Length: 136
Image (cartoon, rainbow, N blue to C red):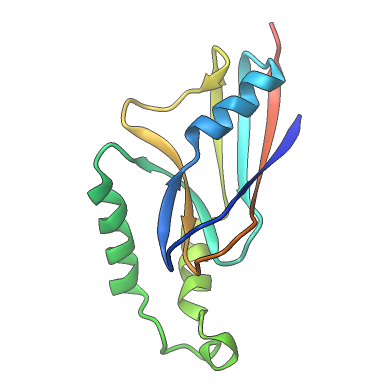
């Protein structure tokens, strides 16, 4: 089964917890055990697994990325000024594959599935969720 999540972001950079949305798609699929692929269909966004209990970890991650990959110093910036977003998304990656157990993502205690916006705010960000597995 494959389904899309469409979301809008409100900041230049932000992390959005999409765990509940992905679990909703898994529930709809009726898959009990298998795998779930979550893919961001954008060159300036990423999908990661990280903690969301303390919102400071999300801010710390963005701060670290900004220190490692500054804005405004890359050749691509002459075109549209977002080369840092492209580099950050390439490092983080566009997707995660997560096990499904008992009809939901089999994440660790503090883990969440996160959409990482690196060139917002944007509307209509597309995330493709693909579910494979056993229904019994």
